[in-house]
Image (cartoon, rainbow, N blue to C red; front, side):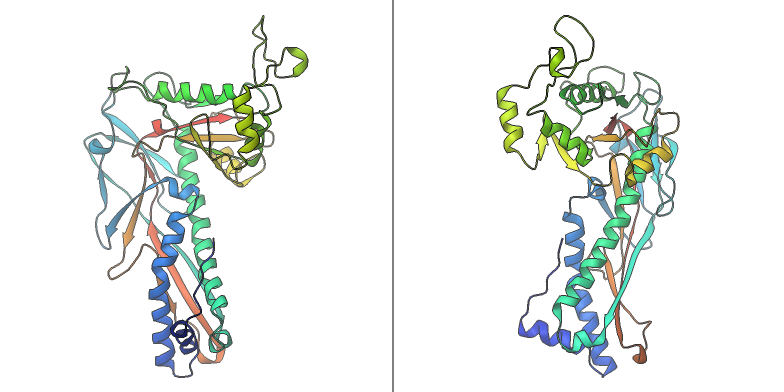
Length: 371
């Protein structure tokens, strides 16, 4: 991710004006740069492939009383109640609320911000690269906070997932072995079909669907998928039910077409009809794995030796990101000139903030594999 300011005469003159000794002229130039780059930074954040962007954005005006009509977003359940997971503060522990399906859901938003500064001499020298990197860093800091808050809600909703077919925790399955196999993805799809029943516990109108559109995985899990090109993929022997994936025990290779795809598909954007999203924060000992371990509840999970893979059904409007738009703002991220610096400090600063929330209103959109 990189934000670049073109080196045109107008842009260079604007950057030089930021370093002017005339305070009014300098402030006007700084405000113009903030107004110019605010929508650009917002666009970069919203188009990045991150966990935070798995949520559907709903915008509200400042000083509004935001709410969601649950009966329009959620199928009526057996008891006419739905479970909603949300955060009250950034980085806080999401909690579960039970609402009647016909209720208006009220929720809280919180502010994610970033403040950066650079030396005024760079503006006087028209160093557009320094200005560009400042706003790039601002976007990165906001995205980092968004990812953590988003995954908190995902992990909590997954652990607390329930359905009409089984008891709490039926959204998470265990892998057949120590590596990710086709059988694991197959079982995950079956699990998703079971928890995506109709409101009476039967087959939905139009028939059952896949239910998993995206899968959050670690680099090690992606390596297991690539390894299917040269490793056995079966989980049972030809004459028995014992799990066996080694070549010495009747190991069967994947079909030639699949192995060819794995050899040539370096990026693996999708596999088995599921979009693969590789996240470095996932995997044993990594940040998201530790967050899941902190909220796992009664789920059997050992953080040091196991990892969680999360499947998401994005065809459902289950993951909501309410965003508050300030009056006169040109984007979700509101960038302002940071006026805390005096002339003696010789600094130019910017302050960016976005007021948002994270809500999961249908935990049936989530399922997972413990590997």
